[in-house]
Image (cartoon, rainbow, N blue to C red; front, side):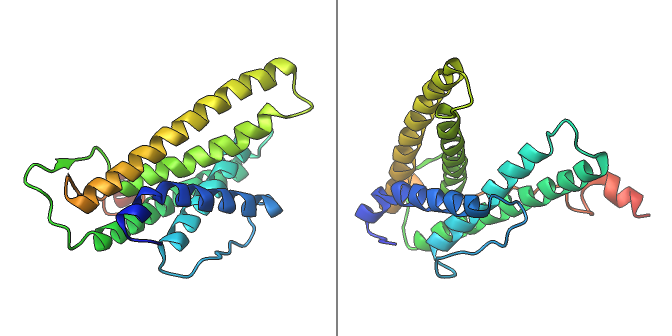
Length: 210
């Protein structure tokens, strides 16, 4: 990735292309149990982004599966636990992306009046990944031949909103990164500190372990 200010201003577009590739690659098999590859070199931001969207894509489809009306309760419980695991993976991957940005901007000294954004760059990128999934699936619904014209029209209207939201979020992320690079915005990260999967923090788990 180009680490210049020009490169940062195009970051969201690069990320969206990688998200589209990850989603497309998943749908080659369209299986929540398929082996996950990654075409990008390890430790690169491209690798991190691809893996992030792969996690999101698998979780999207597990969330679909668990809503089957005829699902066996035991199978549903297994899927619920898989969703919990995927949520934990997603959080960890977002924090790895923030670690990348912390390293990238380590030598930037924020200006005295530098503002703090409401979220870190990686959590904004997380929303961009989810938007890519919504756009992919809404586009399918907007052209589905076995759906009614009214359904397709409604989905086309929703797709237009999602695309506008994607453009706005992309611009906001690029502006955030540019602000951090020039010191007008302070790079600050708070870890999520998830409690429900931690046996020392979830009272149901640590009381049950006694």
